[in-house]
Image 1: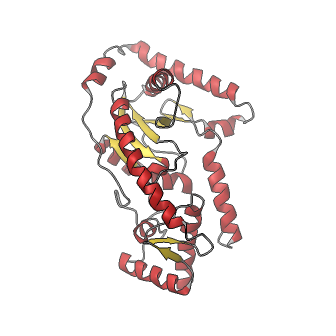
Image 2 (image 1 turned 45 degrees about the horizontal axis):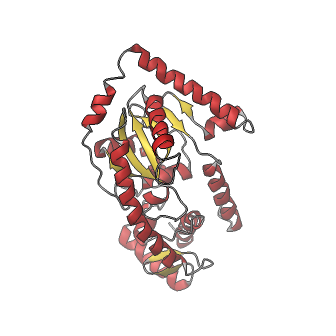
Length: 302
């Protein structure tokens, strides 16, 4: 790999995280680097060299592009401090969520999974459910949020569900790969490892990536006795029929609520199948990828 290629790859990474005002450490840059032909020590030496040349800027152990403000590092430190508080809240919420029937795994995604938090951001969770019970589980958690949390999603944003049989995420793009790479387990560590193995395709984007290479937190794996008791109410063939009915009901609701989208776009934004539920209101992933492509074009790196 030439010095020019090395520089271009690093700039591409930093341009993506620039969208979120998120400078990166040398360790993070290495595990997000799209080539595996360098040892970490050599890579970090290259970062120092690029900083001396003015290609990169660095402060407090964080790297960012020269055209960005040097306030970014202090911003990240403030966000890390807030994230520590938010993570304690997330752990408490996980103890509630894990008691819902058919929840089998809970992972943190979004900002908090990257070790930072914005005062205006939500706490985002990925929920893994029992097979053929995803929509029952989703409905029960939605009712809990509406009734007991007054529909607030500040600390209870559950916008992605997948069942324990499927695990593989179909959307294979840079945004999704990045989100998966940063996921943190809150409940069921073993299932988290299975999820990461099922989505090993992210190594196409991050060949240096290793499980837990980026900051992580060990999550509990002990099932709740209350959950086992509640699940006794859901036995028989009628339960699977109920799950399908709830899925079809949600499909009709999304179609009525968002008529501005065609069927293909709606299915991408509001994934609705027996094994997966996703509700990315505002089409956030497409917007991020569009912004990223624009930045690459501006720097002739497309």
